[in-house]
Image 1 (cartoon, rainbow, N blue to C red):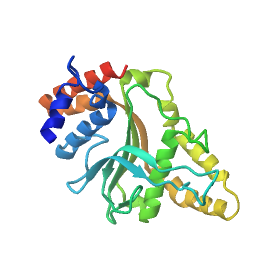
Image 2 (cartoon, rainbow, N blue to C red):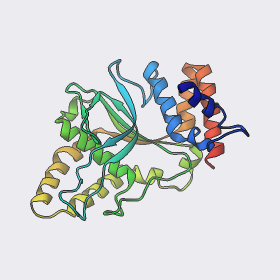
Image 3 (cartoon, rainbow, N blue to C red):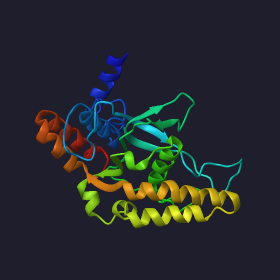
Image 4 (cartoon, rainbow, N blue to C red):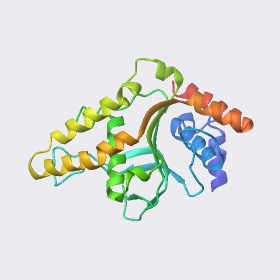
Length: 253
């Protein structure tokens, strides 16, 4: 069956294609190819694996500090999809958001991949709570649930990877990944809670979110820069990856 799947995918950019080319040529698969390369190669980069015990996962659900407290909670949000996660972590069998960092974790990186789209502006119950702020808050919540000593983690971060052209435009990519923006949005989110729930949220904000924001790198990276690093270390793979990237650009407008 895997060979049959491959035969279908091989046709993606031909006149005989039986599925939309974007099923293969998209930012999700581009990110997987990039992270998989870093998992097998040593290179000095934000996406580099700190040791052989680091793993990666795509489309992982991250837990939120702002999940529903009860049915009909008008402040609640759902789990956040992470395009890519790199680090020392384990995934349990209890369903969505079931991720914990290893006790001796040294790395936890969340990556959001973009091609032509922007970061989302908010969620249903908090229209201002943008995608970058939400991801950083989720990173803090994973650290909280794992009861980690944040100072002992060497590599902590949230990266958005997009085409250089997109980063040079007046999109919200750099605006939302600004540290002050993230801080202000999460603080506003916490302030919406009152009473005992509000006290707990402020405790979480002070004990987990603030240290996370202080420690984490929050940056935008370009696909061109990432592929360039790979080409310098592995020219053949880098050239093939660049060809794949060109097709992603072609089929994603």
